Structures are given as structure tokens and as C-alpha cells.
Length: 174
Image 1: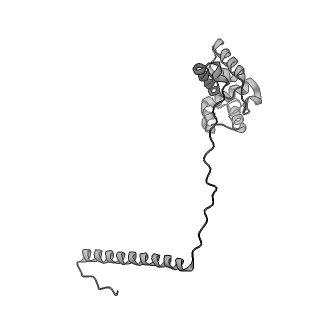
Image 2 (image 1 turned 180 degrees about the vertical axis):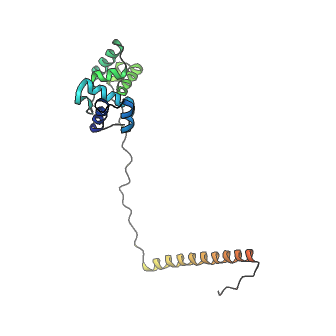
Image 3 (image 1 turned 45 degrees about the vertical axis):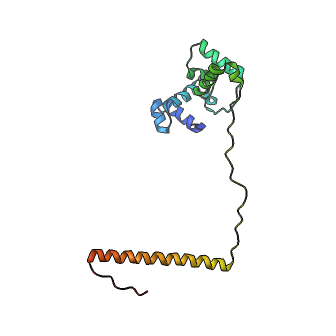
């Protein structure tokens, strides 16, 4: 989940100025402790610019140099992300998987973009105009169904009364 700049800064202030632990700040803001730890470390290393969201594409050469630096210096994903100012260790982990599975060529390929969701049909349904005669027929059909329902309901009520009291029902006035 992505968090905006204000939440990131608030988390850092809670830890560095407010005296809260990384875990307490995460609970207070509804985010994970590892996320807060990353923000604090980015802030300590890069200042306010470390907390800003970066939406950038990285070249294959840069990705490869990041992976090499990480392995040569025996750094964790988090340490590498902080060192290069990359938003999170998951990005580097994704590069690492691509490199392991497809080599340097895998770092060059762009991931396939999602296909747009199917849009609703743009054809408008044309309402057919009904004539007064057709409307009257529909109303008659509805009233007949309602009448049949009410008769059935009345019969069921009378049957229940007979069962419970043992008396004969009064004849209806049909």
C-alpha cells in the first residue's frame, strides 16, 4: 500500500521526535513497522527528499549496478534500497528475481501492461413506446395475479383457523 508524504513524515516525527518505537508509530498510523523503519532510515540518509514518492523507471544498467552493489557489499534489500533511494526493498527483490530467471535481458523488458477493463456497451437501449391498449392489458394481468394471490392467502388463513380451533370457516362472499 502506498502512503502519502504527510503520513510518512508524521511517522518519522513520531519516532525521532515523539519518542515512539517504530512498532508503536506503525500501530498509531495503521502501517507496518518495517515500513516505518524504511521511512526513518530513508529520512536519516536522504532527508525530506527520501520520503517523497518516486515514480520513475530505471534503466537496465542501473538495475544491474544496484544488484551488483548489493551482492558485492553483502547488503540486505532494505539497506540497498536506502543506499540508492529506491522506494522499497520489494522493487529490488523483483529485479533480483527477473535477473535470476532471465538474466540481464530480463531487466530490460518492460512488464506487460494490464488490459483495460471491459467498458460497458455504448449502445443505448431504446425504450419501446407502449400503446394505451398494451398498458391496460399489463395492468389487467397484474390485477388478476394480485387477486389470485389474495384469494390463496385468504384460503390459507381460513385453513389455519380451522386447524387451530376445530371450527368450520364462514362461507366467503364470492
